[in-house]
Length: 381
Image (cartoon, rainbow, N blue to C red):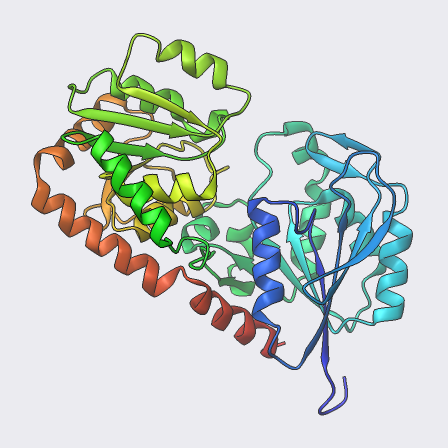
């Protein structure tokens, strides 16, 4: 790159906007962080539409190359054209920096093959592959090569660096860039504020505990529902979302009127619940929950959080035990219920932890902080 010329950055994500997912939102935040810098950007990803063809479009002025997806195996998208398109993109665009969002083992094979020696590689490590044991073993050698080739490795929390088998071996390359919440999306309009007041009236004299997320095993909703059975009738446990476990969770809660399943809610309804809840319940139980954006959103609204201890996860980096909320031993249903009761009984403590929770998010997990980290990282390469 010559002096004064634009640095060229290629972002590689599994999918990209309008697909909505944690990794994809982070990839978009990455792109947006560099918009006002002297940087030219492109994105390459899979087309999120099943059995799709290759497609090139623009998202907010940034070219996005979407490779046709023919198959998904163990959550990994596969494409017959990806290798050729990545090779061509690298040859024509000549990126100075590639930001590769991991895990994405199929793409990693081609990236390691085609990345030029002079191109800097930022390995954005969202989480370890822990569930798919076969894939984890199959790509073990590839992970070593990726970590060796990377110039910088991004982790979302210091906890994950320490807890990851892979990242703990390359601490000298790791930088912490906490994920960020979308502050603009969470702003309440006058109508939404009124909806929140109406909702609060519906639940007057109740301690409203809100839980947000897909109904999948690692979210730990089973343990939240079991904890609810130990609570008195002051409580309402409102759970949003759907997923593979929805039927089982409904059955588990059928004898507990305190549990309210809200289903898939609109943004304005979610913001109303975020506004009026008293305690934010984040019951995730494994390192599949690498950070916890929903947790940060709940804290942003000034609510104390109750979380389980998850060694090596960023959850306990976002929510600080005794400072922004309470943390209890993993899967300990009684301890979780006791923590909720403690916060319900002590309004002063609830307010103190909630204020600290909002302050922590505002100071550490908003886009402005995230942008500074990303700009500094790219400038350092």
